[in-house]
Amino acid sequence: MVSVGLNPSLPSVRAGFYFANPRNRFWRALAGSGLAPEVLVPGVAAMDYLFEVCAIGFTDVVKRPTAGARDLRAADYREGAPLLREKLEASQPLIVWFHGKLAYGHYLRYTGGHRGPIAWGEQDIRIGASQVFVTPNPSPANAVFSLEDLVGHYRRLKNWCDLPATPD
Image (spheres, rainbow, N blue to C red):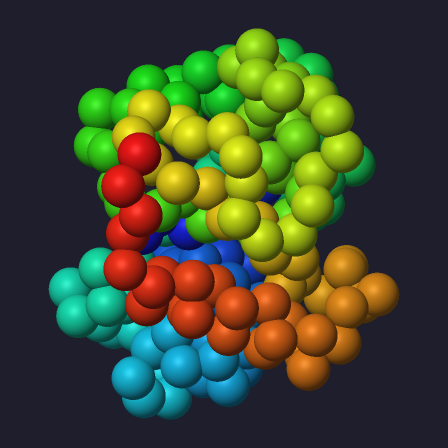
């Protein structure tokens, strides 16, 4: 599985790992959902563990770090989204997990994908052979979703991942 955020936060760049802002709810939602088999202490070692043991990798639609989404420009998406698509199509993860409708929507817009309403959960559109799943962004800026909400969405992803693949 590849986890896709909108872009790196400044605290994550400084710390050298994703979801480094202590107010980000990713780590607590991950622990509560069962996506990881144990509670992880946020850090580089936890990122390595998620990759090596849980087969979860991390990337972003845009690679330019900013203080917030409002600081991104159309040029950032025009550059980042097609590069992300190329990498995902080349690596063919089983699942591409977008953190937020904003990240997935910008990915679609700048790769020529579907532009209709985006629902939470499994998406109808694939990226190459990869299935796509969208959960709310755990950023503290997205406070409309509680930790409990995030755990529920992450648990839904975990349960969906545990389902046997259906033939095409």
